[in-house]
Figure 1 (cartoon, rainbow, N blue to C red):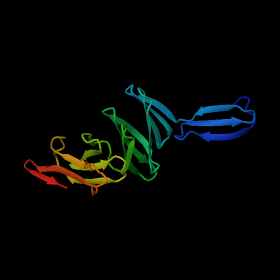
Figure 2: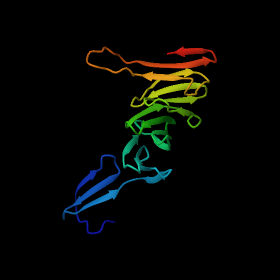
Figure 3: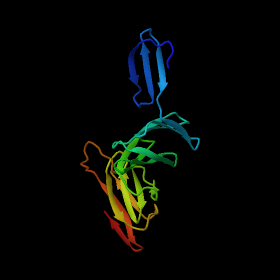
Figure 4: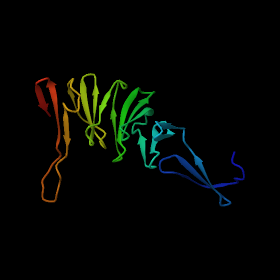
Length: 197
């Protein structure tokens, strides 16, 4: 119940869906918080669920924010932040059993969403600021931040940052240089064999 509200003349949502502004016939303007739930993560971040498939991640120290949104409309069921920079969220659509993985870089505001199954037992390597390396069941998957497709997957048991290397578009581009996209990974097949893809 909104007291002294006789006639609504205008409604507007905040761009990230977290607030609703209501204007009335008598010139009043009321703002309503429209979040589903809100909680703090490790005292450094605040997660505001504006819907089940959209979460605003806010860094409390600076007030900067990034909006995690599932392109598939899946419910965001788990969020973790690694090294105070990288966001990893698991999503699930209960109706179709579709699972995805949301990956984000809070420094560059780049987000990725890839189809994913059997979530929960992955190991994430954040040695490269351009891509996330995911290790699961003997397989490495590379995801470039800002791209909604994985760069590829390879089989290996060696996941140390010292034993693999990913290079993505590292050469500077200038007006006179003719550079195309360069995406390479070097990894160990076994203790004595290096493979480059």
